[in-house]
Length: 437
Image (tube, rainbow, N blue to C red):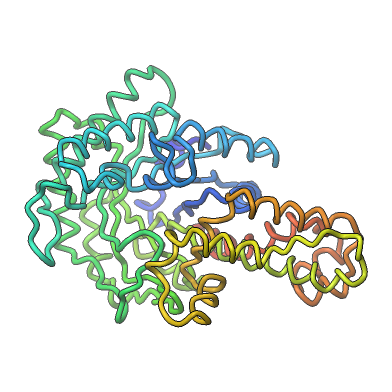
C-alpha cells in the first residue's frame, strides 16, 4: 500500500473510531531497517523508514548520505529481503534550517528549502517540516520559544519549496506533511529532572491555526489538505538511565483537543523504550504516528554484544580464528571520536566507559559505520558463521531465539539472530498501531 493510500485510509479509519496508526522507524542501521521490512511484511503494513536532517541532507549529514543515497540504501536492503519497494514510505524528519541554525535566517532558510527539495525529488513522501528553532540573527527571548507566527511562516516557506520540487519533478506521489516540533533535542534529553510537560491544548491549536493561515497566504490550500499530523509532546522521554512512561491522565486534555481536527493526528517523538501498554494507549489517544529510533539500535547493540560474548566463549575451541575484538574496537573508536557522546555522558572514567556501552541514549549507534568497527563486525559474523553454533550457548545468550531455532523457525546465522532480537522491540510498536479485536 503506497503512502497516499495508507495515510488516507488511516485517517478515515480513525474517524470511524478505529484506533490505528503506523510505526515510523528513524534509523540508518542496516539490520534495523531489514528487521523493519521483514516485520512489516508479516504485519501486512507498509514500512515507514525515516532519516533526519542531521543524518541525511544535501551535504551528506553524519551518515555521508544525501537523500537519494539513503533512498537507494533502503531499496537495496529491501531487495535483499524481498520486500516490495512500492510498500516503502520514505520520510524526512525535522527538515528545514536545523543543521544551519547558526547562520543568518535568510541563508539558513535557503539551505533548509534546498534540503526539502532534494528529499522530495528523491521520492520521500512523508515530510516533517520543522522551522521551530532560533536562527543566527533572530532576536532571542531567554527561556521562550521562537514566536509561533515566525515558525508558521517559515514552515509554509518550506512547504512551498517542497511543492515546487514535486511539480518540477513531474511524477510520483505528492508529499504528505507533518508540522510542529514540540519535542526536546533528538536522541533523548540529558537535562531532565522529571517527566516532560505535555503539550498544552492551546499551543497545539495555535500551531495548527497559524500554520494553516500561513499555508493559505502562500496559495498552498491544496497542500494543506495533505497535512496529516502535528508533532506534540505527550509526556514521554528517556535519558541516560531512565524512561518516563506515558500517562494518559496527564495527556487527556491534549487528546480531547484533537477532536476539533478530525483530519489530523498526533506524531510522537522519543517514544523509545515505552512499554507496549503505553504505546497502545498513545495510539488510542491520538498519537497515531509512533517514531522510534534509539530503542531499535539499542536492541541491535544488545544482540551484537551478545554475539561478541559468544565468540569469546568459543575462542578456546577455535584457536584458528582471528578474534574480532569487537568490544575493544568500538571503545577505541568512540574514545578517538568523542563528538557524538561527550555531551551526553558525565562522571569518572568507569562511569563514562559504562555509559558508552549501555546508556539508553545509545550513542554507539553513531559508530557502527566507522571502517574499523565494520571490519570487526564482519570478522565477528564470519567467525560465528564458520562453525555450528552450540545450541546450549545459543540458549545462554539468546534464550527466545534458541526456541525458534530449535523449532525450525529461525536460522542460527548471526544476522538473523540480531534481526530477530530487534524484532522483539518492533513487535511492541506493531501491536500498538494495529487494529485491536
